[in-house]
Image (cartoon, rainbow over all chains, first blue to last red; front, top):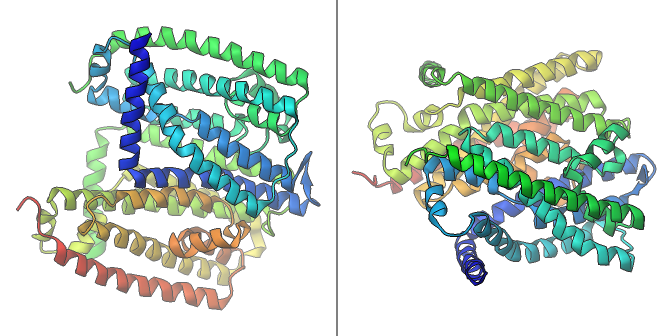
Length: 267
Length: 261
């Protein structure tokens, strides 16, 4: 256990150092992550303006609060592992990770969390500035805040396990771009990035509730916005726990099968 | 004419290179169709709640999406791959080989590398545009069509000059590709009419990264939203940027010392 803690501490230092070195990449990454929710916020604000100030149960202020919170929660749960793995397998870099005595997922988790420690404060500042432009309306209840934190942690785990497992498809094919794109389209619609799930027709809502996507981003946001009853919040947490379990089992199975077919392409 | 001849030659070389990897065609086809489906689904969701979006009717936004794919395909077909290749060649010193050729170096680096399968995006963009035009019917006359063609040309020139100037920066800063990535993420915002965005974002998308001239302005020309003054302005800007980027390229070239030579 001590070894793992040291590994995390060391990975923190490495990630910090490399992120401070590549400041330009950081800015570029942020432009993309701010612009996307901003575009949908503007689109939906325009729609509600022409519809007399609201769309469904969302007023313009609700949309502002929704998309700004989506931006922040997406930042917390986001991973880039799917781009990374293709490179690791193709270049044979994974061989070094396999030689280490700990599971390679640990250094990825540590890398992800430590880069979030840098990006999250920046995103918070941006959210405050954008909030000043877009006037979000947000009233939070104490119990929603209490449930929000565990929901956020679970959302991170659901997404991390799922995307880490999906990233392993690089073991079988060196062209993962098409797989990744398919996945991102599903995330766009079913995790509430394009529009609040409440605005979709009910088949889409049902699909979003069964599949893991809603539990990765939208659920913690809906919770903070006060759109869920305590019972719905509890069901959501349970769904998240189930998906964390499914994800960790899948991850183990796929990882074992993948390492067996890995022959270090290019190495 | 020389340009066309060289373009054809380089296109043939790229096509022959890619013909060995035919599966890439199907992967690109799949990705492009998925992208189109995503766009259309997004439009359907938005227009299920409203009749017009900031004054744009559904078919007009459809025309905008067509232009978005058409121009995105043009950038992906030749501008982006060629400029990325050029930046690499400055870093690695292989630009020497281009400079020794008897043709104009700016022309050569601008068309040397092509991602031929991105033609799919161009074809799809034209298809979407055609459908939108048929549905818009009598709203589009000869004047609009002519203005559209002119604005598409001006937009293409503006985007090309913009990329060329950014890529030319690599003569001074060896790692310039970062700036080009900013363009990619800002181009996404062009899927929707620029007029929806708040003033500061509109300004950024017009003058810092010229997405507006590439996508929105041609679509506005087609839907009869453009005044003569904007058309003149866009043409003047295109001509100006073409001259300025050429001059900037020549200044940059003087900086080049050839890493390998």
